[in-house]
Image (cartoon, rainbow, N blue to C red; front, side):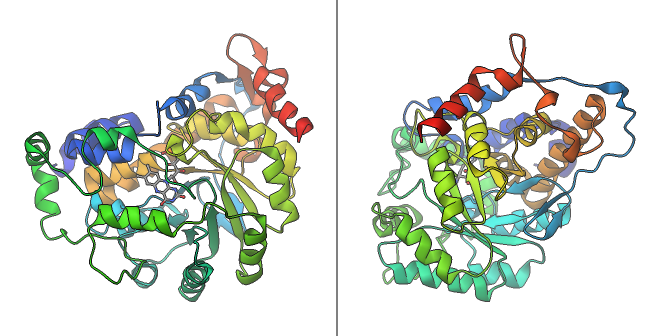
Length: 404
Ligand SMILES: Cc1cc2nc3c(=O)[nH]c(=O)nc-3n(C[C@H](O)[C@H](O)[C@H](O)COP(=O)(O)O)c2cc1C
């Protein structure tokens, strides 16, 4: 899409989603956009933010707003990180590198997925900026160890262990579109791909796009390799393994996919440095709570001992403010940065981050909060008319804490 044309249409994250939908073949768009089962959790992630409202105090006389946040000894310009997303290179050539560069320019962290199409070492060589690495617990603990060691050797500052993906979720859009194993592009699918001319042109030399961090003996296409990776994951992974990983990774270790307060408390006891409240963007277990609903229970459980981060459904600067007001230290975005990537590569991701920054700044200004640190629960109102503090959602979080 010509540079100025897409920019003129990209005023919000939702705009970038619309543009991405037009730019990508349907099956590729749906792969990024979709969720597991009936997609109830996917929808709730976004809808739950609309149930929390902001209670401004405009006469606080705020002038400059500080959007920066401290995480593991490093100050980030923005409390919005790019979350790990596999196969970003399917949307844009070397998509992970493009996204990482946009993150660095915005002064924030790029979390590289295990399933990147650019290798751990390649990204490290070609990108200057804060980067973390996301991994899994594999049946072969030697592979988990090797991933961690490669990340450490390449200067990744933190390790993220995703715990909600040890069995692959089923995204039915992928099945309906034939985006499955082995890939079946029927006549309908071929027509659909042909409509995405710019994408086809950009990706013409990228037919061999694959997961770059796995050494696979035989040559596989990306889809059957995805299934193969599924067989590497250990559904029996437990706290013993987290302890083991803690022992071999010296830097900050985060668990991603924590929803239950008991797990959050156990994470603290195991020496984990941070938890990410996440339901994998509704792509794994459907019918779990929206991430923002689970947040208060986790925040209460860790009781300030380690930072709590969150992802899932964060589409506006206002959503970031709500998450921070409920005790999150920072947010991660998954799909939104992929939409930007699909539209315009690095410039598209930069635009997405710029939108979050501008919206966040404006919300703080209108709310009378002179920075992120000034936003607390008093800034929130439950839709329908009560201060947030005594709402159903908090009661739910507290009940979970008590029950655990
Ligand atoms: C296409 C895609 C690929 C993803 N791949 C991974 C992954 O490799 N590892 C991981 O921990 N999470 C992965 N996720 C989940 C994201 O890290 C994040 O939890 C989720 O997208 C957040 O929700 P949001 O998309 O509403 O922001 C992926 C998400 C998407 C959309």
